Length: 361
Image 1 (cartoon, rainbow, N blue to C red):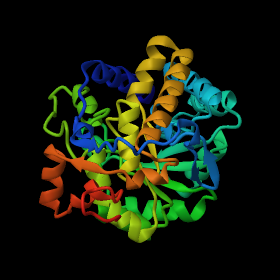
Image 2: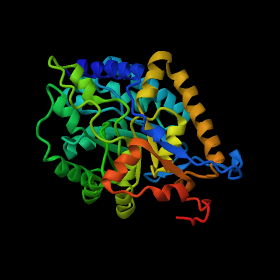
Image 3: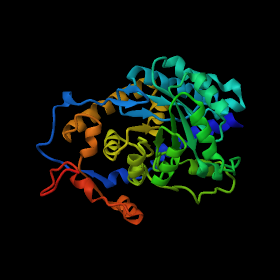
Image 4: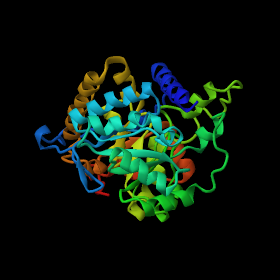
């Protein structure tokens, strides 16, 4: 049952990718152009520090799959691309391994093909500390993602119906493991209040993982006879979540990752400019590797790297941190969300100090 469900997830996720059922909130983020603000491309560094390691790219392959022979082959292709490009990556949920240990090779292949790369294990908030330690050991992980997915579970025919213990589990796992814990949504977004709660539980990083990418409510609805589609599109986008959570991130010191609906290297730049430490890509990279293999994904990652470096030079950012001083104009549904939630967006448009009569903020 679990193996079949994993295969269904991949098939339905690829169908969504083909149908382009994605949020356009990144299009509501406009980068202000300063004609004399560019710097030399070769002066730009893409390095970011995560978990006491240097990532040479500020974007990564986010958790997708594993748990069956079919998905193991996908993980192998993803790991080959990660090893060749140096990009960090996360496993898909390893909960399947604890139900059926025979599927371990679909996860261990990640480390076998990528022996020196930065790799994140992935478990649900239902996991025990013992399972967390075992998952980390199984793939020699450098960090642990704990995914929270109440919306998916509600729509999933065989999903969980009890969620109040998740906070206690996350706290226990964070105390028990010796690698940083990243808590991520699976595509429904985060708020500042959630980030503050996670800070109190000992979490090291938060992936706001907004809607607009792979919609697991839609996937699980497609697996039901009654098509429980009312929650399709539920939640906040990555852009809205970054705006909502930025104050909490600053106050608690917890860095934010962002994922969900990232289509291009320009979306990566916008997410970084909104305060993300790094940006995760899942569905788009999955489609590339399934259609054309790891060599195509290697070319795509290298293309994104070159494009991101060039665009950072264009906006005068010599490093990722400098992108947070890039002037942005936020419009459309993103502005509507921010206004309704009480967030002032005006400062984003004059952060560089190049606004007429403005000052650096």
